[in-house]
Image (cartoon, rainbow, N blue to C red; front, top):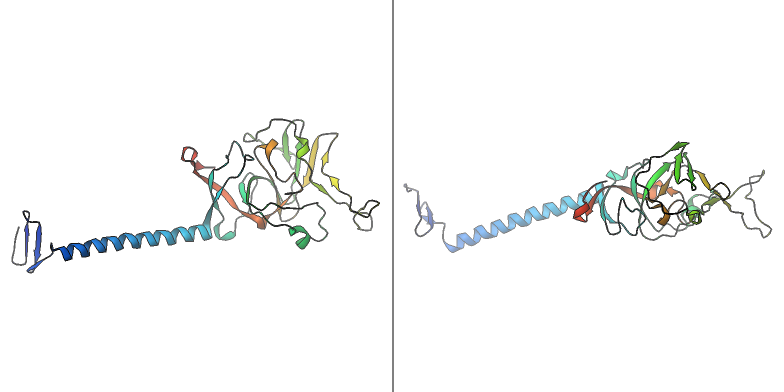
Length: 253
């Protein structure tokens, strides 16, 4: 094909426009560089988009340990959402909890009546069982969990044995003058929330907190322990919504 301004020869692969041969090496190199910078530009925009998403909308975390078996397994990669940090935890949500807020209660809740010494340094993944103001009852003889008297349908939960030794969460109590009850040595007396005789644990979730459990009930450090206890909502990173890896189990939660 040819006209006054353009000609194309298939034999020598040349493209001539207005007398200029654009098949010359210098033009081919320029086209290659342009393609490279187009790809680079697209890559940079993709990286910026990912950074924005994982700053304001989501983050990636890894499950550490067996406490959420068999819903989640050790080493699973999760996408966790907290859009503009406005997430409000709800019953049944799987959440990621920030670690390392040692002495939090002593600094913020003076006179707080629960014995809590949170000393975990890494994020933990648990399921929200109850939110502020709700009453949690766990019957360790039947492995039933109740919230405000309603039995939960927990098809996700695993039990192996009657594991009452995991129940250590307790509280301080006060006399008629509002003073913490102390022993003969002057130390506050610790009253466990688990009744040995009935095998029942009962607790009411304080304001601004949630009560969490691992799905693998016999092998989970969670709100039943003083080391974790009730979780302040501001220490919840977000809700786990998608398992990214392993690929064989990839999908929504």
